Structures are given as structure tokens and as C-alpha cells.
Length: 203
Image (cartoon, rainbow, N blue to C red; front, side, top):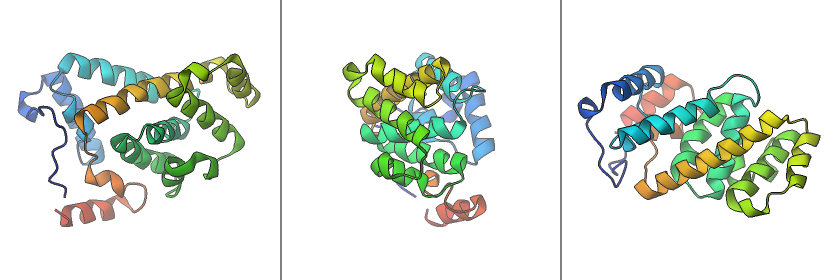
């Protein structure tokens, strides 16, 4: 298991974190078996932590609109464009799980154009990467192209909002030199009990 610090900024002990944040962290640990480092790396600024995860949940956990898989693919593609190791690794794991495809995250991170995606998904990622890397170039024509692929106004806003939120997340991860959890690398590639054993034995 890596000995590299999870952040170059202070990381509080769990018992020193405000109760509401600690409760959310424990819920995540109970569900996944570990605590994603982002939850701890941002916890030294509780008000910002609450705002960050409230917006994250509003975008990534809502019902309807984009699929859960589509949301994670947007994060992987745009985070790769921004060279954000933490977000590519963490959300790559979620993308593998959401799509049930162990190959897809690597493909999207390297070149989404060559990935196992349909035309609708490629149009979505083309727009998201453009917005993430060259936002001033986004025009009404790009919006219309998404409409032609069947995206609603709400869907298009979600694509843009997820892209914008994770541009923030990418930059915070760069600022903190945030380290991905070892568990993420195997998630969606091997069964959960196998990756848990492999991560534990590598410590």
C-alpha cells in the first residue's frame, strides 16, 4: 500500500472532523469498505467540504436525465484532458462498475474517440472535453449537435455542469497532490473480495 501522503495540505484525524461530515464518511466506508481520499483531503475546510459534496450529489446522484454510466464517463474524459490522476483513477473505477465494462475507463482516458462507445456517447464526450479545455469555443452549434443526438435541454445542462464541477475538482486535486486510493485501481476489474484481498496483501 502506498506510503505517499494523500494531500500536501493538512488531513485531520477522523475523530477531529465535525460530526455530520464524519457520519457521511462512515457511511461511505460501510458501503465501499474504504474511505476515498478526497473525503479526508478536503475535510480540513468543513464549510467547503459540505458545499463541494452537496453539489457533487446534486449532479451525480440525481434520478433521470443522463445515466450513471454517462456521468462517470464525462468525469473520466474531462479529467484525463486535465491530467488529473485522482479523478481519472477514482471515477475510472466507478465507470467500469456503472458500465459493467472493465476496459472502458482506460479507453476513455487515453482516447475517448477510440473507446467502445456509441455515437451519442461520443458526441457527449466531444462536447464535455471541449467545454473543459477550450470553453470559449463552445457555441450554439455545439449545443444543437447534442440535441440532434437526442439530448434534452436538461441533459445538456447536466453535461456542462458535471464538466464544470469536475474542472473544479481536478484543480483541487492538483492543488493538494491528492493520491488515489489503492483500492480504486482494481475496482471493476476483479471481484470485490479479490481486490480487497490483493490490496490488503500488498500493504
